[in-house]
Length: 328
Length: 180
Image (cartoon, rainbow over all chains, first blue to last red; front, top):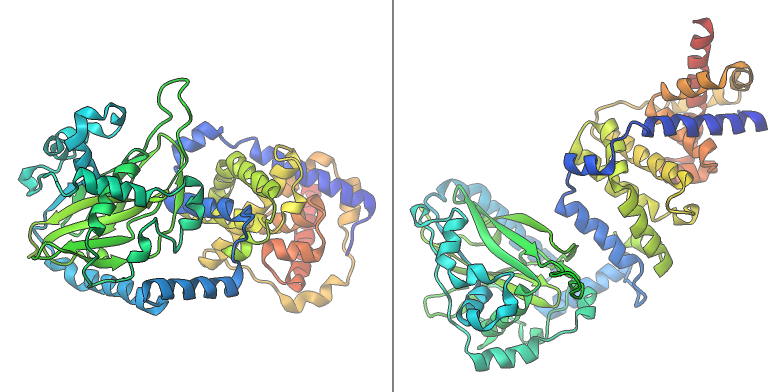
């Protein structure tokens, strides 16, 4: 059933011509960009390929590598894959059965690091990208359509002293080129202290260090609450800092994860981790903005209280404080 | 996913992959959407196409060449067809028991020899995509049956059947042109 030489050549040329004629009708890329914006999930997966394929240090491929990484994670966090899945499924179950009861939920959003910067606002002129929401966080909340009428307002968090911040800065400084290695299991400096897990109080000073790191992350990407949907989910918007003025050095590459940890403030004032998952980093282009939606139940935010949600930005963690007023 | 990643080993391949992504993602999405009629499924097809591409980087030469463009389009179409099949939107019958017929000759050579080139091109354009894709792999991209099978995610035996059926279908379309 083979074609002769001429037949093959002719068929090949005809197939090429047929395809070229089909493609001649394809709109220009600019038009297609208007028609469709690739989802963050898509971009993240493509970026994973890009990040992985040229890794000269060697990507641990295949089942063996996966098992090895799993073992490392288990050793580090003291929790295995099944347990992690348990948290996720527990969140989903809670979402399924608890969703209807989640009325009158109010969420107060505040980027804690931004609030810290807000205190420092005037003295940090190079922080213009995120400063508007620092200088008047209540006003920012209203701008975001999260006003007191919705039971939502903003308040500053003043938890970090300069000394604490300085020491935390030293500990938190991790070279950006180590970013790729941190996408899964690694954590910034100080992470080795973080051996406790969900339900257990954190080590003293841990939250302060978190906020100090968050301040650094803010220089790379802003993060704030933009909407609350039916008291069940909320949306957080992110905007990557641009390259700035003409002639300025190019903006650093930014990779960011979704929320991977949630802390809840207990009555005694200590922070207890209530949610933890792997960090799945995706690279972001400068000057891009997007929104992520999260289901509160999935993050184990199941009772009224103050929560701090955490994501990874390059080698820093970024923190946002959310308060659930009440949950009927 | 890392299994796929491990197949691209050098920084050169990574760089080429990035260029291919930046150059063709929207084109591939459009091609996939044309088949799937669904923006999100088309996105899935593009993602799968790029994953498939990681196994065929050695077949990609110049990023901007028409040959590369066609190669990627074929991969995207094959992934879209695969998704379509998975979504049960079309039924692709392989007729495995029709293998016996393959040994019999067909008259495609004769048709290709006498029909006008324009008619052949139009006949190809009127072929269903699942037939076109297999012909593109085999004759346009000059893949072996094994390579075609890998690209389309099919068994070699299935590829053999599909090629045969595609040729029959093309022959049928050309025959209809002649009668018309």
